[in-house]
Image: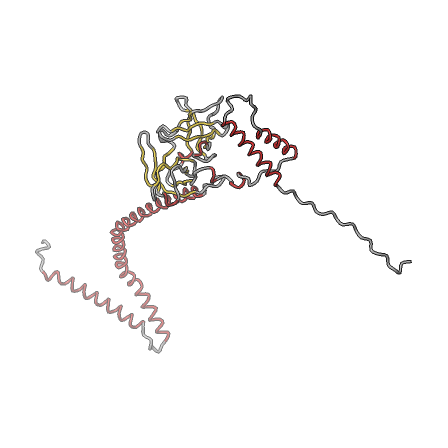
Length: 370
């Protein structure tokens, strides 16, 4: 007989008995719990025995009934962690990406800070006024190479000012606006810089040709340069101060001498513009121009007086026809200069000698002296 052919009465009997047994068990457990929690019993020993029996019987039943609940809770926790793991993973990936971006910014700021400190620490001997600039644009081509800086006439920048990075010379200013200036680099084809070889003191002209290493041209002397020689600015022509670092001498594949620039070892972003116009800025004017000539000795003064007298005398009649008014004017000017020197020597006051001490007077003898 199949399961479907059975009557409903056969199905109800087991269910009824099961429900009845469950109710009886629940009633027994409830009564046991009530008896175990009684506080008003008069027999303390009976109370302790009842409590122990109830605890002994209810412990396994409670553990058995709580087990499905724990399993169900663990299953729900696993399901929740499984579905939340994807969202947590996605959030962690976003945080890691943001941290990488912040790390890149921190490294860039650290490098920029180091370069700026190096530029600000640049000094010259003797000191020359400088302003700090930031390169904001560049103009490159097959032969042209220049930069645009964010300082100009308002900070005293003029055409011709040398420009240095934290490593060495990079070029000079060729155009100035109110708050912007254009820098012509040493590698530009129009750049010409007088330099000197530090080891031999040989002069040369550093000529840009559009490549990374400009040429050394117009050198003189026997073996004026060797590989590795330091190249500095010579100061010839008054365009640059003497002694600014330029680079190291190298020899190209064509045999020509070139310079590997010191400024190529670092990016050109922060630069220092030297407010240099001429050597009068770095020369001690008071020491270079004496206020008075030193005094002449007696023999030198007599010799100068004789020359002044000889130059002041009229030329003899048999003088050469070439000695015309120009020669006479030169002689008179020379005589006047010598006369002024002699007068200045005579006018210089001689140091006063201290007066001789007066002779000591003997006190008159005492009348009581025998």
